[in-house]
Image (cartoon, rainbow, N blue to C red):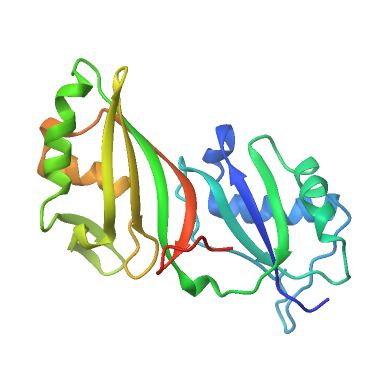
Length: 220
């Protein structure tokens, strides 16, 4: 079997604390336990042909992760989700397996939800200030890069964002750029810490809901 195959899986609960490297190893073990032989690369240092698009940060959850892989032998794709999920730890569930027809380079937007938790502050009073802040023409933050510390304007990477108040928290729903540029959702909270500390949450968490291409068509 030479076709590139793709898994769609979720990573929630305690599994959000599994790092990207550990997740790759976990997936490899799951294939082995499920009796599915991954195809390996050729050369002096062969490695299993699997790759995960848009690796998650530790602590972030997702309902729409994608992993490409190749198998050495044909397998019934409809049975893979159940077989692999049974071999995976709690919090990782394979939702679908299918032939990959599009390149992951076509991914552009992420839909996400999140929560900003506040101790001792009234969430409803923060809604309008948060909307005003993220409606700025530019939101320039300082962040670490491979070349050192630099400045980055994250505003162009935010397609839309809105907030609703809950008990002790503000819930957010947003569409942000996945690639070129890449926006880590944690940078939404970091922008508040740097530029508007009076609005900065005491705790922030995010969940990916869906992946889209540049035309806002769901990517598979």
